Length: 191
Image 1 (cartoon, rainbow, N blue to C red):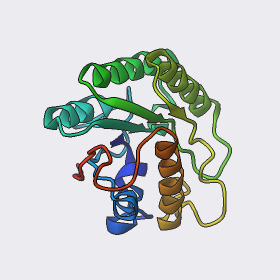
Image 2 (image 1 turned 90 degrees about the vertical axis):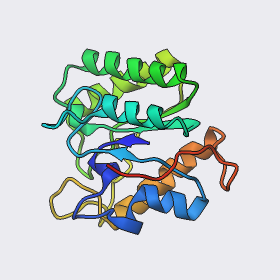
Image 3 (image 1 turned 135 degrees about the vertical axis):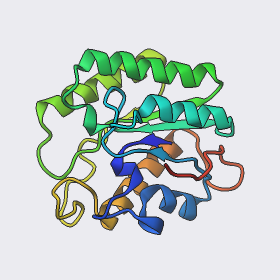
Image 4 (image 1 turned 180 degrees about the vertical axis):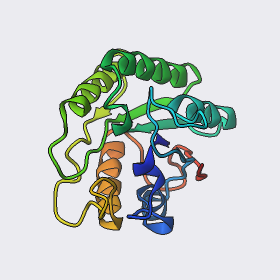
């Protein structure tokens, strides 16, 4: 699983067992490897060079996952949508060439109206997913509702993480990822 702070968890929610990825693992017996870093995306990296590309390299180096789930990222909202499209398509195809199934969830926005940049990169990710022939789910409005976003106005609360878990689980089920020990390995670790 490749993601940003919405996948990593923050002081506002999603730490430990409240994180949507841990909840997904515990509630549905789906093993995961989580590589998530706050402030990163397909194009945007942090000061340490972390981003979706190096995080995917880590997942592929372990070679235990059958499925790679990309989630996000709102952090690419200020990037050129064409660069996001190219980077996303490259990563989806790289995972496929390594024999992995790929699922993609676009940026998850807070409970406000998403700005044009978020909508533009969401569309770029949708196009990249279509270009790689992989399933795409638009998560931009998943957290509309009271109590789902923390005091910072950006990051999900524990309740928001529960909603993300439900939506991701529904998306995974729609595309053949089943509960239990026979589900594709996505083993649990964090960065």
